[in-house]
Length: 176
Image (cartoon, rainbow, N blue to C red; front, side, top):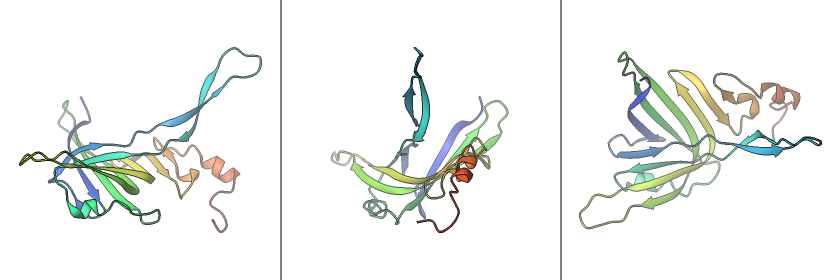
């Protein structure tokens, strides 16, 4: 078994959560599809279209005001978050790293129920993600950058929309 997750960490900008990180739900990569049935055919197919909005949740074992205070920022005042994984091969003991860089906003803070002296945590929803870059052992697996456009999209190390960006002259002139 390769790439078994054996440890993780999350940064909100420069706030390192490693001592209080409880759980991370990474964004789901989901391409919306559109159904197409050609005239004169009895078979439908769904074609991938745009990437659905990305959202992740991070649960901390504390309710730190520095993290809570990140909620409510507006577009343009994005938070750069970085997720790290330590991956281990149970076959040969080799370790590799995975890093996901995200830029977005904390738009929801959800505190656990408080029950006497029992420890409880707080969940943060990180969405409005405008940059998602997933690197495995230094190699780009996925990169989606809303502001850089389709030419910068990377899927498994390739740029499938580079020609589209060239055809549409995206990236030239003064971008409004």
